[in-house]
Image 1 (tube, one colour):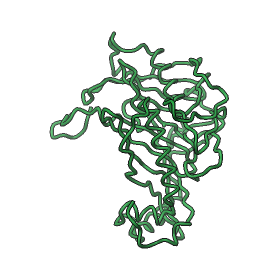
Image 2 (cartoon, one colour):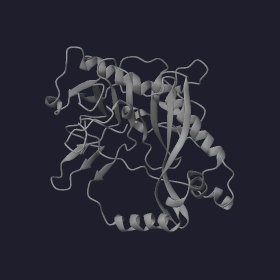
Image 3 (tube, one colour):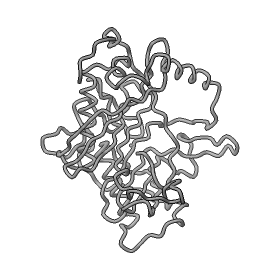
Image 4 (tube, one colour):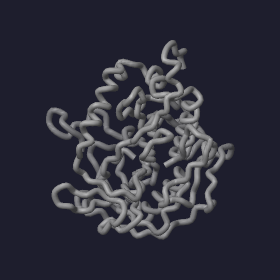
Length: 330
């Protein structure tokens, strides 16, 4: 990291944030996955839905022999008992004979979640969709994992603003190769036990003021190192986040051969009273074959604990155009 020449006094500013969560469809792309608070040595338990596992700063669920494992009460993966539901959108996609079965794909997703987050999804519901898109070199099995029946949610859902319909929010979301089961994307959604209206309330005015404060502070004219200073993220904190990103990449690729781990951006939600509200740090990492993973990790005090790992962007067919003129992808 280059030497910083200004703003040293701001290194002690407390950075906290909220990573906005969108409602994930069971169809197509979910920018996908909870890990621990990367910038603290204190244990940070997962939400109650996965409270059997606690992460600390120096533990992770990677599989390489020289890497520490998470301190989990259940140390050996066993296939969970799941309620598997076919997506209502499945009629848009034919499932070929060469595809993994839905049950096998659900269990593969369960192992994926276990290896990345150290969490069992035993007793949960998975809504599965086989997706085949002409813009992609592969087909996928997409899974949304719910703590309760998604057709009748009682504790974790959005409320539709016009119909008052309860729309269940997943605990996890994953995407795997539809034929081979290769890991593509995974996300811990990070908002458990919440009822959220899809309407935007009066808080919008405050959010606009916070966003304008970023503009006035010159945030968007700064390089990433200057942004780190303004956000109060020290070199030691950044190194801890970097280690977390590396361990997540190792679990994603199922190998310790991970390279080119880089910070590529900060998610700034706004600024108030000189304090930048940072929701997440975004990284990229590559495996030995050059496949790139995009990794998003929440800040230590972020209200949302959402964590995502995505490699789906590697699979777009170069130059593909769905509509004449290039307006969209299928």
